[in-house]
Length: 234
Image (cartoon, one colour):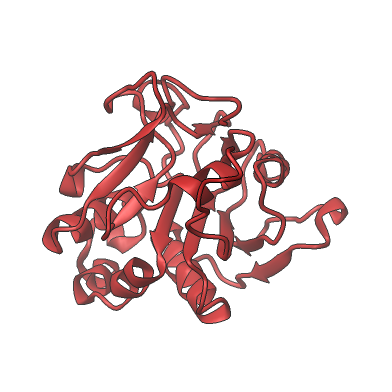
């Protein structure tokens, strides 16, 4: 990266949500995100997740009862904002993701793609627009948004999302008892507030693992996998 260019952000808060899997991928995700440039990580674990001793430098938050994907995700983002209230960017990812090398440095120069953003997804599903030259693209799909693997929120957007009554009401009134559909909730929030939903293409994150903690019969194929994934971004 050109040292003469202006670094837009440097203060991050980074979290990983995790739940028990038949074939755990958390260690791969932690190693990959560290290689991508982030060292200070917070892990928000549903009951039954074991953290290897190799990663004793993590901030480890253990849930003592099963919350479900959306409640754990929402609570995790809330804790990140309260723990790091001055962070410029909040990256919250899932436990089955590989990241492009050098992603942090790249993003610190490239964020934000607009003066106001709803969310930036650095994971690009295979059925979204595919670019050869790395860039952010708008994918304003509302409830049909896809892929909450690696979301980045600005400080204002994180606070706005967490305080939105419709987002909170998803737990009470949403489908599947409000336990799923993180991406749909975020996409709809962007749509209602006329905020852009950005996706980076080619993808800077890749979905891994053969099982899903949310949809047990799903596999990492088709829409659930990035068509183009950069192993390293410059």
